[in-house]
Length: 273
Image (cartoon, rainbow, N blue to C red; front, side, top):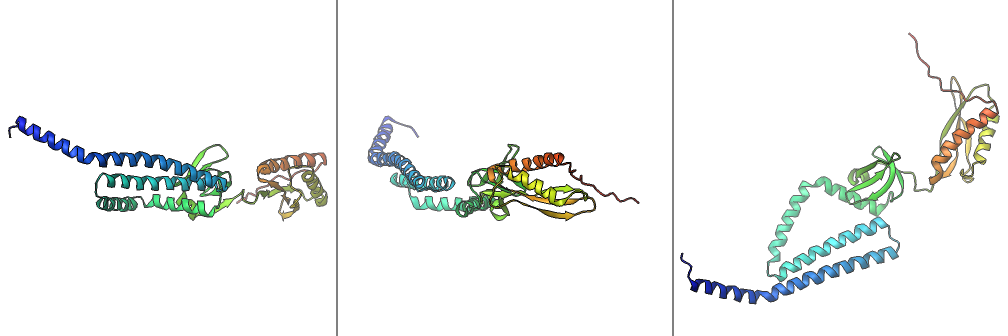
């Protein structure tokens, strides 16, 4: 087909006519897009401030604000393409089919998402708590949508999927505000039990980090073939727990040395054939 100047003129006129007819839709769609983006940012900030003023959990505040942000963005995008004259019904159908396909291929991720929702709603732990779950002990650093970030005692960062975390056993060491240590000190059968218990109680009473209420407990735990085992159970605030744990062992050893009481070492019996 030979392109003549007359063809070029007709194409140019048709293009100009279409551009003039379509320009209002394009301009209004762009205005909706920019105004919508500004409104979404404003609404998101306003919602965050309201939730912060009402003292909602920071994790829940961030989670709800992020969900609201993406919902508003999707609605804005649908409004934008609708204003351009693109049929939204077919687009929504395609989007739904894509969502179904993605959902089937990402069942594990959806399980983790649901687990994150359960953790945020029922709050078995919060950021800053020390927990034990899935064989991991550490401090909760961040609760994300799909995983929970935990930092253990050696400063290693561990990510646990929320799906398995919400379905497993969780031990929260921080929820009650205080913890009871469970120590065992072995003494020989030649030692006066009452004297040993009195020395241990004195050590605990002299430690300001040991809580007075509930009271510490010192009792006979077991009578083995080689020693008398004393159970030492002081209470301490969560932040003082490990300090009380180690101080109790150290100070009891020093007090026993001063009283000439020997801590009986553990003796492992070896069978001989």
